[in-house]
Length: 299
Ligand SMILES: Nc1ncnc2c1ncn2[C@@H]1O[C@H](COP(=O)(O)OP(=O)(O)OP(=O)(O)O)[C@@H](O)[C@H]1O
Image (cartoon, rainbow, N blue to C red):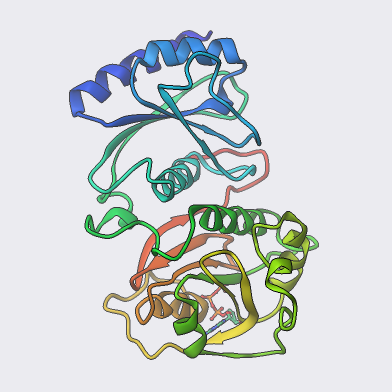
């Protein structure tokens, strides 16, 4: 195994102990094989969250007790994006909570080299953890639904539709209140279908959702994943306490505002930049910047 990787891992352990970290987040896909991964976990000798894009990924045999697994969308992201998404998913699954300090080890997929250590204080870097009394997700939204939306949003941001960038909005949770503050821009394409046929957790629906992302307006998703509507115009009666960062227009404004007057979470994909912005309680929790090209893996 590469010297740099070994050295960073050893130091990560020391740093984690010194700064009182609760867990080390390790990007497993960077490491080439199970044996190398097992060696690394042995070196880390700490509670580990293994992060992987691979379906069915498991901890190396013998290390299952020390490791939790977090699956992240199988798409190229910047390193910062990788860390943000992994942290969000881990929080949604209650593996992390407000106030936690975590040490993240990451690098370029398949390179065999871990080349970056990041220490994160949840609550300082990620607004999601800003209010320690609150759950990261609305109570009616299941972690699986949130993860699926993150994956769909990430794929739409990276791939667009037929070569063209796509912008859209997903609002999940507290759906009755969200519906009451919105109206159809076009006929609801999901109207009349049985609930079992319009759940975002069903992989067969992926193409349909991507197709309808071209429709103006937003998707309204119930916390259990059932899509209630697409093509919905949000008209929340709320003002934001803080102005949004510059450059964010009416789509982002509506996304943020609907989370003031409901407990929903909004995921907004910008057509102009591809950035995914996630809003809760009227605030930008985090944004995930689109990598510059499919092959790049910038910071
Ligand atoms: N209140 C709203 N509810 C649902 N969709 C909206 C709302 N306001 C705007 N949109 C959608 O957002 C699209 C883009 O609007 P605008 O450029 O002002 O937003 P933006 O926040 O700058 O987003 P982008 O970064 O994607 O351009 C509109 O064409 C419309 O489809």
